[in-house]
Amino acid sequence: MARKPLISGNWKMNLNHFEAIQLVQKLTYALTKDDIDAVDVSIHPPFTDLRSVQTVLEADKVPISLGAQNCHWEDKGAFTGEISASMLQKLNVSYVICGHSERRQMFGETNEQVNKKVKTIIKTEMTPIMACGETLEQREAGEMAAHIVAQITEGLAGVKAEHVAAMVIAYEPIWAIGTGVTATAGDAQEVCKLVRDTVADLYNQGTADAVRIQYGGSVKPSSAPELMSQPDIDGALIGGAALSAEDFAGCIQYRLGQ
Image (cartoon, rainbow, N blue to C red; front, top):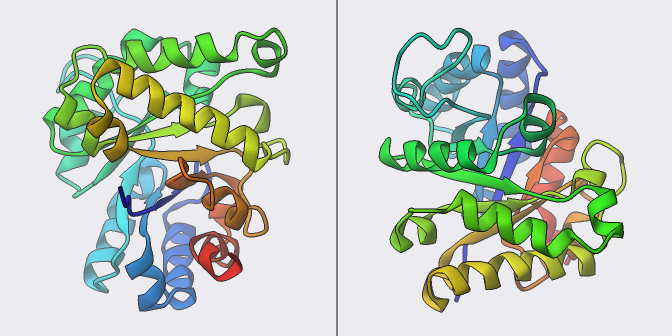
């Protein structure tokens, strides 16, 4: 089944709204119509940049989707410092990352909380990018598969098959995030296949064939072509390289290196 690749840039806690506008403008100059036709692209700025980036994308009719890095599962309430999915929807956000390993590790997010976010994002008519991944210790202890399966199973609990088929799951080995170390294409393919097989076990093969699975973890223009050539890798969730218009464009143009 042909799945259109999704290349997503996660800016994390970087760039003020002036810098964000400049990056988007540089990125539009670096990409061609063929690039955008070949892949879907989303960028995920900090919350303070979203309105500025939305304005640039819409005013210039840039065919790049606006994404967010996180949201709360409640629609409103006394949750100081949080942002609801409905607030993001009003800014025409299309994709929302949930369960990123940095959120899990640094802020204690659980599989149950990620599950609530997935359901809320879907209810608000946006697409979740649900992240999963293991630590180096878990990998070396032979616990990787069980950990990934648990994250997928608990993260998708109660989510309908048709919604899973339309969402994105991002595999990001924690040991490769921000370290400069990229999993080998074979390692990445092995786990992305495990993710797809887990979805097939939970739902059916049609749902598994439809869901898009990204790889994340120090993806660069040099590593993108081999990663993207793997049968179960349908895109990339890119951190550091997404802060450079040239590098991010290079990842989007991975097919030129295949």
